[in-house]
View 1: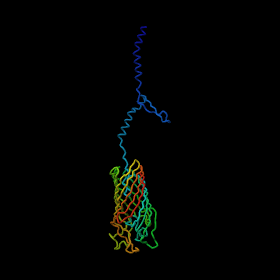
View 2: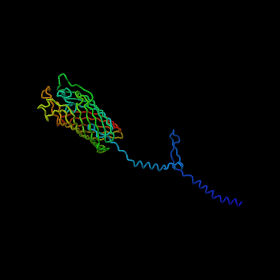
View 3: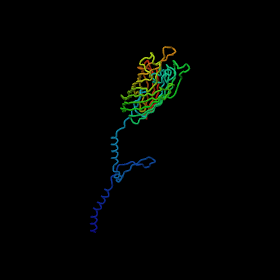
Length: 381
């Protein structure tokens, strides 16, 4: 009996030590993780990962979330896009992929063949243009333009125009039986590119180069009959949260063009005696806008634009002193100044769509048109 008691006393410490070893092997509960109870129901419940799962992952859940938060803080935000150009007549300096649909209605052009800028020289003076001297012309034109930007600094574009012309006052014809009537068809196609030296959400300084190709029927008043290149410098500046300033300057330079026969060399010719009918046209424009209305999805900005042209060389058809205009002559268009004032508004809808409507009127004695209406839709992508 004494031996049995002694044995029990000796085994008791060993048993307690073994029990302590078994309890210590049990791991402490880990952080709760939401697991789907039923994938079809979308309900979630909590579960506690085992020690083996925690060890196999190598990183506790709390450390993983902290690491993700650090990654978000250190990553650089993407450059916010520009709000877009607000002008309707000054060329857009912003480089972006876009589609543009534009409609113009111009009234009372008193010298359509001036410097062969709108259409070609009157055919009675050896030109490829219409067979009548037109002193008052109305026109409408639709432009479909597509622009693709490979990045924020370079883009390429093409424009397809369709034109309608309606002569209102004809002063003379090549022959009494031939009269210039209403015409319609494709005008001169334009292609080109933009290259931005400065490109940021608040400022763009862009070189634009475009070429007009003689695709319109010159004898119908739908084109100039020659190619033209137009290098230009365009500028966009966000002055404040509501005020934007945009500007342009450039030159329209004819390549080729028609030449005038003897009446253009007569003593009635004013200015330099030259046979070339087409001339350079220096152009410029300035357009401030103000965001008068703004919500999360809609912005409306009135805009006023001053646009001007100065003709450098070239001729225009006019009539002699006779009432019946029997003596048509080509007179110099050199140093002619034309300035227009345009007023309109642009509405930005969402991140892609833009609408413009505006009206322009002559400010100078000479003009391309006395007044013009313009409507435009632009989709940027």
